[in-house]
Amino acid sequence: MYRCKLLILLFFAIFIASCSTSPTGRSQLLLKSDAELEAQARATFSAYRATLPLSTNRAKIDFVACVASALVAELDPPYSDFEWDLAIFEQNQVNAFAMPGGKIGVYTGILDVTDNADQLAAVLGHEIAHVTSKHVNERASRGSLSGIGIEALAVIMGGGYTGGAYTAQQAMQAGVALGMELPMSRSQETEADIVGLRYMAKAGFDPRESVKLWKHMMTMGGKKPPEQLSTHPADETRIENLISEWQVTLPIYNQALADGKHPDCKKNWN
Ligand SMILES: [Zn+2]
Image 1 (cartoon, rainbow, N blue to C red):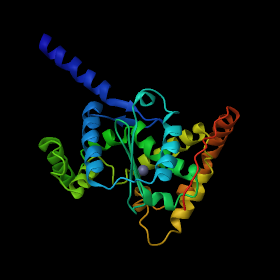
Image 2: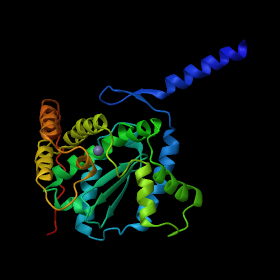
Image 3: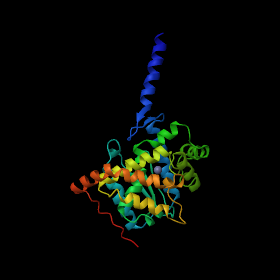
């Protein structure tokens, strides 16, 4: 009898611990441990760093670091306490990602389609919002990780980091397992848009630039658009959603400007 009561108590404790509310008020089922996901992200990020060419262009590194640090400075605990890691990969891909535990990866291809710091802040704000909204945990809790990604992750986690023991492709597949290279669900993407806009506005980046960016992406030919667009086209609905958020984000932006926040991140290269 006592044992049974204990089990029931334990069940409720687990249930309560795993039910959470996202930043925009969605209820989330989070079954994975943050510590475990962060350890996986650390290993995957190391694999990316070891296998993809890192940019050596000082101007590009400074520009991305300027935008990223202005954004993470506006996060709430525990994310404000993270030591955020940033890697800039010399790749033509138009993409960026953020991982649990505070890892940000930017492909230099995205710098060719973002006209200014505000537009890069729109992309990075969106990616950081996936982390602070625990979207990887939510996705993993639904058991939708791809088999091949898990295998690659097992190679990296289990085999240990032996320096070049695995390929760039394996690193990418591990990234897929953590949801780095794939779009999230529609509701998670919308949430990342909304939360990301708030971060950029709080940091003093103009949220209106996000619409210019996504419109630009819509008309972009040749290059593959970032994950946000690859399965969820930047249709009129997305643009309308971003614009409808301005009533919330423009006052935040104006307050940031009044507080003297205007990150001076310049594109000093051709
Ligand atoms: Zn996204």
